[in-house]
Amino acid sequence: MKVFVTGTDTDVGKTLVSCVLTAFLEATYWKPVQAGIDPTTDRQSLADWCPPERLLPERFCLKAPMSPNQAARREDRVLRLSDFQLPDVKGPLIVEGAGGLMVPLNQEHMIVDLIGHLGLPALLVARSGLGTLNHTLLSLAELRRRDIPCVGLVLVGPEHPDNVADLRHFGQVPVLGRIPLRVPFWGPADLPELKSLLDLSPVTDLG
Ligand SMILES: Nc1ncnc2c1ncn2[C@@H]1O[C@H](COP(=O)(O)OP(=O)(O)OP(=O)(O)O)[C@@H](O)[C@H]1O
Ligand SMILES: C[C@H](N)[C@H](N)CCCCCC(=O)O
Ligand SMILES: [Mg+2]
Image (cartoon, rainbow, N blue to C red; front, side, top):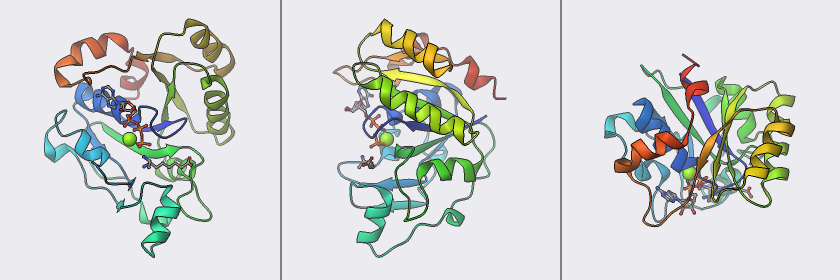
């Protein structure tokens, strides 16, 4: 079971969903490109959720909180698709992207090309509320155009049943559930509640 967690945007909830999936599936987590290291990297955000040996080092860890192509340019580096190889791990693997699908890695390739290069199915994380229909349906259309399977959609934010209905209807993709944002933050102790919010069978069915 290997899946690429992508999103409709940055700050949409990919890491939160990755925490839940990694803990629930006892998976290994890998963020191929981290762009922005202050105050923490995404891998560090998973520290409470999973043992350190299941948190793989990033292939690129860039300092600037920008798209990977821009952050790499600041460090006089160029990221190439051929730099990325799927890690050889036993058991489930959760791979988290940077930003959304059309975020550039270099002047030719985008995150969606990396998903294709790694040969993984995608799981799309999207906001639940106003504004999500356009971003989510465009993202799903791009995955479909490239024949990248999408196992489903996880929504993050407040309840919005009409959006769920429209995303199911127009997106033709399973909506696996919704995680509300909250303070204090969700933590590993909340895993039973988080699990009850999501139907992860399309993910576990990947084998
Ligand atoms: N454990 C948590 N509990 C509640 N809210 C959280 C939790 N983790 C993150 N958040 C909030 O959820 C939002 C999305 O954060 P998250 O880091 O998951 O986004 P992301 O899509 O991974 O962003 P990036 O593109 O930087 O990787 C942020 O506003 C963050 O403050
Ligand atoms: C800095 C941020 N948290 C991510 N690491 C990178 C997001 C890149 C988004 C680029 C964009 O869509 O304009
Ligand atoms: Mg993240």
